[in-house]
Length: 58
Image 1 (cartoon, one colour):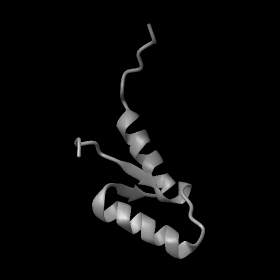
Image 2: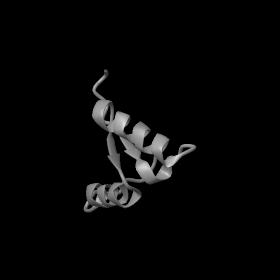
Image 3: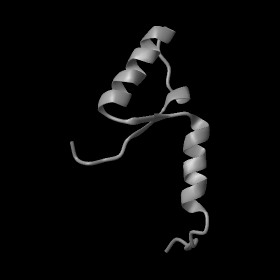
Image 4: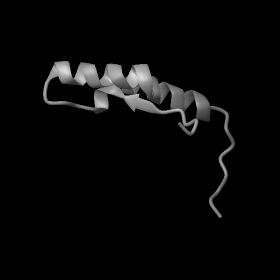
């Protein structure tokens, strides 16, 4: 592992069946990633950018 913080957006992924989806997300949650819903990820992004200075691109 290289120390990356991985976030998987659960409601943006799919599988053939609900059972397969649940199993895959559980595997990710237990071993590799934070599993969150779209609304949670958007809230995280809004919070992290709130008050941040916007710099023009060079």
